[in-house]
Amino acid sequence: MNFFLLLILFLLVSILLFFHLIQQSKQPKGFIGKWMMTLWNQSYLPMVRWSISLLPQQKPKNILDIGIGNGLSTTFLADTFRNAKVHGIDLSAEAIKASQNRKNSFDHSISFSQQSINQTTFSTREFHLITAFQTHFHWENIGECFEEIHRILDDNGTLLISCEFAKLAYFLKQFSNKNYFEAFLEERGFLLHSVEKKNGWISYTIYKKT
Image (cartoon, rainbow, N blue to C red; front, side):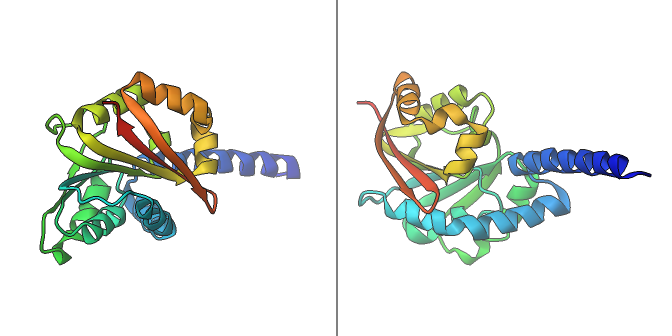
């Protein structure tokens, strides 16, 4: 096999691996999914801590965490807001299984379920705080997702979205433009309250229109 055939084979394998990892990032499965969830949560927990620290002083009673991986961000929320009920959702059954193993160390309400944010089983205006860390650029039918968030978020609630800016610019380029994202939110009944950046991260604090 000559050099050019080896190069073509290498490129083909690299492309297939790249798309497989993208799919795993959306819906982790199997050994690779478990490994990636562990790696992501360890890498992104500093971003989660920073993002939550930006929230105004509040004591939410019900919190929803979207796209939880293996549940580290959800349990961090539960540890931060000790009097709140915290629920985490993910498309991946593997993620929910991994998350269930974390909740035994908490003596207050924390729960998980496998579902998509574009159509949930939650009640209208159920949550006072909804968070999405390193996930919204993977959402399909993203307009529907934000409309569903608007439905289940309390009228005085907060939506907190944080991610790596480079990932946002790659997967959801138009949303990396503040004016575009702000207009998108307003069309769905939201107000972009603040935008913060640090260490390549970006965090949005979002309210419902009154």
